[in-house]
Image 1: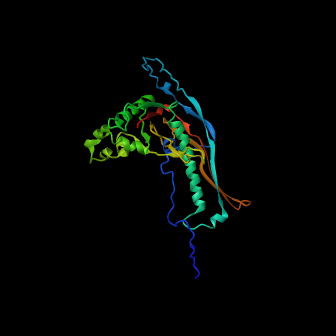
Image 2: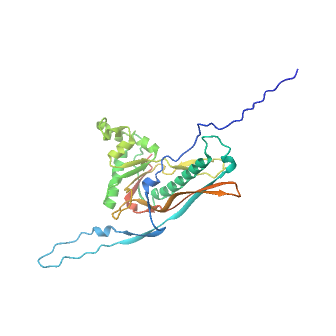
Image 3: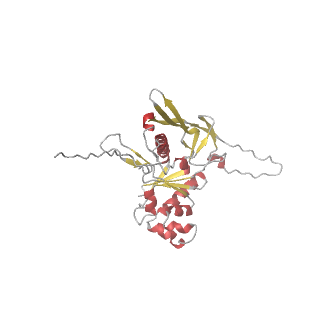
Length: 309
């Protein structure tokens, strides 16, 4: 008797309503170094320094001419750099996928995410560089109940206020640090009598609300990237850009003629997306470009709390 074999004719296809993907959902680059449009890729700007805080004896007596003083200014420069990434979508692949997979949009978003990560990395290379920015190692790690996050943060705020004659108004930390600091005894004691009151009461269990109560706008940032060579034994292994540091700084959303802040990003253009048909390769090349500078305006307008956990 002949044996009948039943062959599986099913061919696996991608689900039409589910895709797993890592995304850049907590970009801090614009928070730390807000971008603004400039006319030229490089140029100068004025700096009015601390010497203009000089206190003069401005007393005058009868018919004495009023003393004349001068305003002193230096100049500095910015220089935008070109950055870009590209991807390719093969026309045959584009016509052979099921919805909701949209190769053109998926490839564009992936390139955009990598552009965000690259800019965020550049910003943190400056913002966490203790050779440029003042830092303090905490006396008691916040991972212990004996940690003193409130005292540590307030102390840094005083350092910045004393250095630039303006109060800091922003703070950046990782999700891990935010969840750690609210478990310390000092944090709980600082907010325990405000529970149920608005707006400060939420600080007992919420790092964001508590930090706002201290006068700082918080940004919880877990920006990270793969730090291993492709194909090596440990690939992919990633690391956070901020790690166990906390950045406190003076932030301004846009430049003015009275600016005194930590960082800005002059840019000629940003997020320029282009799509080209490549006839010889039978597909589309997608590029995203920017021409921008991560400019350290005033290093004294920021301070780092180091090794907090």
